[in-house]
Structure formats: C-alpha cells, structure tokens
Length: 461
Image 1 (cartoon, rainbow, N blue to C red):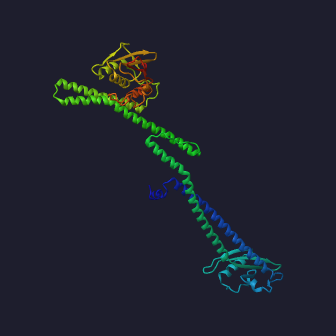
Image 2 (cartoon, rainbow, N blue to C red):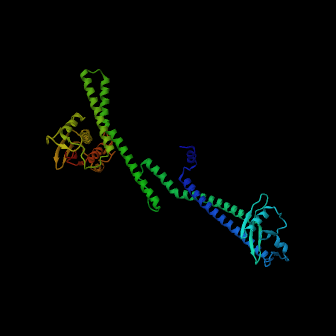
Image 3 (cartoon, helix red, strand yellow):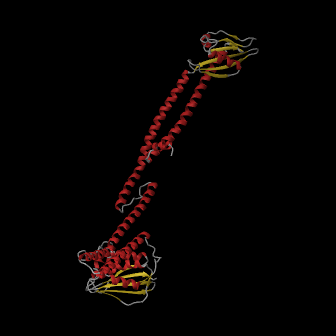
C-alpha cells in the first residue's frame, strides 16, 4: 500500500455518519462549483456585451458628426464636441483624423485602435496594459459614397470588472455558507436517522449477552429498520439457541461424568488406603481403565450429538443389538445391596437403529434412576414392536408424584430435592433428547403403586 493510500485511509471518517456527510459535502461542492463557474461565466459575458453595446451607442453618436459624402472624410464640429471626442479615434480609411487628447500616438490604446481601423469592419478588442486599467475598444466603419470612415471608441472596463469580482466574491461566500449548512444538516439528519440503528445495536448486544427473549417489533418502523430488526431477531434466536445448547451440553457432561469420575476417585482412595496385592491392583486398574473409557465414550457421544445436532429422525445412525448392551449396563450398574436387577427374557437378537454408545447414553440415566429409587427390585425388558424396539425399565420405588409428572422431563427439575439422593435433574431430559434425535422417545407410564415404569422406544435396526 502506497503512502498516498495510507494517508487517504486515515483521512476518511470511520463512522457512517461522517462518511455520508463527506459524500454529501463532496457532491454539494462539485455541484456548487459547476453552478458558480457557469453563473460567473454568464455574468462576465453579459457585462462584456453590455460594454460593447455602450461602445456601439457611442460610435453611433460620433458617426452623426462625420461627413462621408465627399471625396474626403470631414469631421463636423458640434456643441458637445469635447464630450464626443473623449476616448474616440476617427480614421479616414487607415489615416487617423482625430484621437483622444489624453493619449499619445505610440500608446498601447492608439496602437490597438490602429489595428482595429485597419480591419475596416466591426471588431472589438480588450487592452490590458501593465500599469493601466483594462480598456475595451470597438471599431465601427462608416461607409460613404467616395470614402469610408472608421470610428474606434474605448471604454474603461474597471467598473465592469469590479462588478464581476463582487459577484464572484458574493457567490463564493454564498457557496461556503451553503456547504457549511449542507454539512451540518447532513450530519444532523444522518445522526437522527441512524439513532434507531444505534439503539437497536445496543439492545441486541445487551440481549445477546444474557440470552434474553426480548425481540424487536416491526411496528411503527421504516421498512429498512423493520428488515434490520428481523435480521437481528433471527441472529438473537440463533445466539440464544447456541447459549442454551452450550449450557445444556455443560450440564449433561457434568451429570454423565459424575459416576465414572466417582468410581475413579473411590478406587484411587482405596489404592492409597492400604497395600494391595497384585491381583487387587490389577482389578483396581481395570476398574479405572473401564471408567476412563466410559468417560471418553460419554464425551464423544455428547460432543458428536452437539456437533451434528441430530434433529432429523429419518436417519438411524447405526444398528445395535440391544440385549448385550443391556446385559453390560446391568453388570456395571451400581446398586444398593438390597436391590436386585433382572432382565426378563425376550428375543435373543433385538436390533435397534442406533449406535451402541448412543444407546448406552439413553439407557444409563434410566437405569441409574431406577437403581437409586428402587426398594428391592429393578426389572428390564426389551421386545420388538411394529417398526420399533421397546425397552421398559421398572422399579418398585415410591414412583413419581402425580403433580410432578408434567415436569419430569424438564432439565433441572426434581420431585424432591431433599430425598437424600444426589442428582441434578438432567438425566431424564438427556435420555429423551438423545432418543428423539434418532426418531425414538422416552416416556413415563404410571403403573400400579408403588413403582415407576419408563419406556424407551427406538427405531428398529
């Protein structure tokens, strides 16, 4: 980038109001320059024609005192002879007869008059001699029967030039005032027009920072601002969705990672509590490795789901045999000593149209809740239904209060926060969201008290 370009970029205003004001000022300057030049050129031409008319009238008055009827040109004496002879040259052909008494024969005016008389036609010229005021000269031939006379009249152009200069100065002052007013009014008008935009920008910035549900109304707004408001509303909706998904992902990761991290911490505490045999150490290492692999699977599953935003239920991401996954989850399920888990016999091979890791993420919160609230028994069953696979998780715990059923799948809601069980109220909403992402669902079915039944329906593989 050249130095001139850098200087030009520094001079250009950074604000839209400044740039629009500069454009308006530049346009007005160009227009006023053209109008001023045209106006002063027209006035100069008008003043020159006015001076020429004055010289022709004076030449016509002098012509009445010249006799060209004889063989030679004669100048008749009149009462106002001295007034008529002022600034007048009279020629017989090219031979001078009379000249103004105030000029000499070799003066620039006399030489210019001689040249005009030699042309023997109507002609004008302007003499701008150094140290002398500008003078306009016009030659007027007076034809006769035997001789031709020529009258050259002169007129001082100083008053006309002064008038032209006064008009030019006045037009320049008027242009400066108009340009100043144009710039000020443009800045005020543009600033007033952009004030709603600035207000909308500040509001959008404030709303986007807190994820507010406030939006811009298109009522009583110009069409341009209404379109801007609609665009900002769409942007705010996307920002709010992103913030909500980010908060949801963070909460889900925190919820899902709590169990494997707790297992790792417990195993490490036991490992440091007393010396272990080689077999116990290997068992502890296997438990830690399994928990670490579970953490990795949880992170990959949730991050992939958040990244791809799997909202199209028409596509089933993979196929999984449900029975082995249920067996594995039940074996790893941490249950109190008095609670027994069982799986009712069903089809030996039951394929669901979901990936194994995703199936585990859907079922894990349901099994963890059932083990947490069950009194003595957790029963899992899986069976095929037309076009889908149905998995039931049943426990014999206190069940879900009827008043809380409507809020059961809302994130962060718990029926009784003081029931002595940990949890953040995120497992069930996560399971339902992941199931619906692949075209399935998670629902609660009230049954005979006590107990709770949660049903998972997934597309068949």
